[in-house]
Image 1 (tube, rainbow, N blue to C red):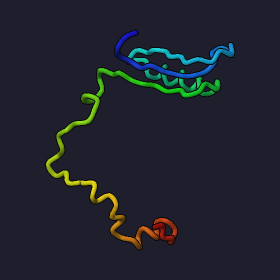
Image 2: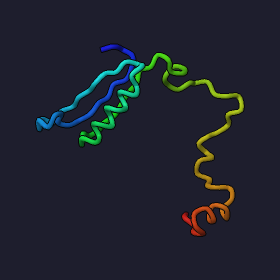
Image 3: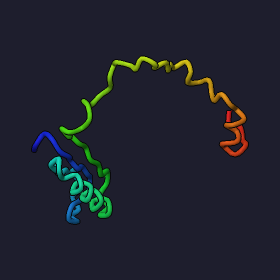
Image 4: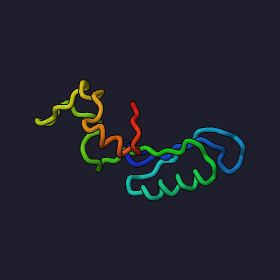
Length: 100
């Protein structure tokens, strides 16, 4: 198998054989539409846990999370539990009921 492209994974019984197992099929980087079409066919056929992963060499940036934060970044966890600043606006948005 190549180390770039798309891989579609699914669980099911192909061709109605009744043997349940996990399966995969590899697609080249220029075959994304084929991979998506296979996923649609598999879902319509009743296969379970249909999913796709990608190793695309043309993706933007390296995968993962950067440790460097933007200069104006000031979010901290202590601000998470304070709730909305405008309680009346929030009540209006959720139908006049207060949840809290």
